[in-house]
Length: 365
Image (cartoon, rainbow, N blue to C red; front, side, top):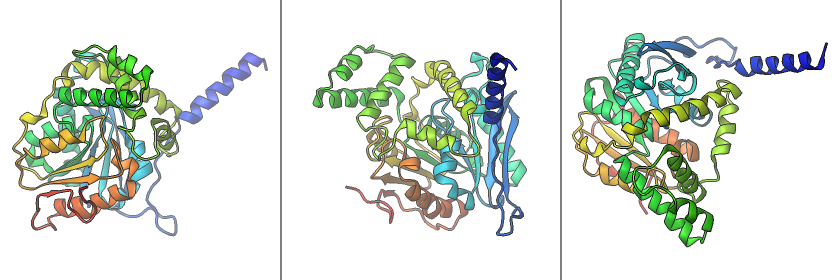
């Protein structure tokens, strides 16, 4: 066998192995699948294209949560599986990779279809699929970063289908968030006399910035501790995702392709989005904020929260987190979801006291 053929076969074998993923079933002590549980990774026709949805839960009768990941185009399904899988013992978790993200990225997706209104229609299909398939009246939206933009609009417009809205590192007004984030990064660079950061940041367009500027600014925010407060990094998150059964090297490639495609396609809309116009809600609202978040400044999310009117609203602070509480403080995040959110959506909490971080899990500084 020639060296070239051997190389081709090895590459083919590597790609085949890398493409093999699965999600483990829930089993009892004897290895039997637990009745009523679900553990599947599916491609479902949503909005006219196949989209990736993972369904996992030890009991499908439990309240359903649909995860709306960040980005746009940044699938976080494997990360929640790695850090927060315990949630599957308490909820029916629906990990949806949005149009253009992860395994829902396809090279033939029309850029014209990448609009917030289309994403809202996609989400409505996912919500109705979960309600119909599992006999749910309502679902809970668990949203992160960009996902809070989509989730806020949906919860405002479709309260009859939403049991509760949970916003992790909530966006308020994108342009204002970006301005404050940029100014914080520049202030940190100046205070630390980081001349390269100062030069790069000051060279950015003072008006509407490009995707490249947004990503570059984000790298400096991360470098100065505004994305991760704990000993964590983007690189470590990648390794964590790849350690799961559900993700592999092919997914890493798709992640990069989908993230860039989604950012470029959606930026003309999301960069102008002002969620502060949505203030009166008919569903419970819960904000989970990282105290040190300067990627999507939590100080602005708190200001937005204070303007909201809802049948119940709560804000819970993660004092050791920046932009990623589910991954920086996973144990506490799970406790908050189980002890605070679950009673809210199951009707066990008879009254919701408006709390600004003053829960048994959180205290203001």
